[in-house]
Length: 187
Image (tube, rainbow, N blue to C red; front, side, top):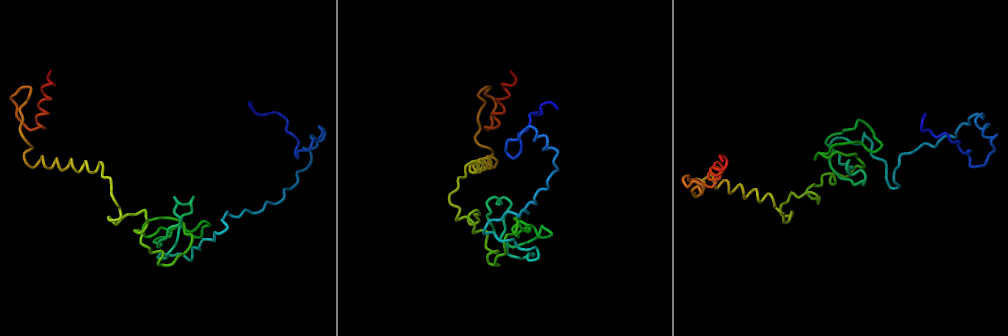
């Protein structure tokens, strides 16, 4: 195999051994490794286990972590509309709340906490008086253009002008632009 490193390895254990001991190293039988300790899932010191699947049903008030909030652990509350996991899960049973959000249940909460109005969250502004000033920008420009268009359609389109090229054609601004374009397209 080209590119493979063929240099001899240093002896294991960090101790200097003679060349005769390195050859005997390969002939000694393998010793069994000591058993590894079983790994436990990582949980913070103040984190308690998640509720069991049997404790959660439709209509239960819960606190859950949304998928996007998993790195931060931020929890939101709500009422369970649908169970999406068919059994216990180490990170919590996955559910869909009545408002459509999906996440893993971390704890059960009181009914009052679960039914808290989402309109009270800072992220949502259903109450127009709380929104404050908005920069309408492009929307306002589009609305103004719509008003001008509607005004132009209703009364015949504006004043008549005479063609500056031939002096014979009369029409509104839009028709005149089309007519003048025709003069220069022929040339």
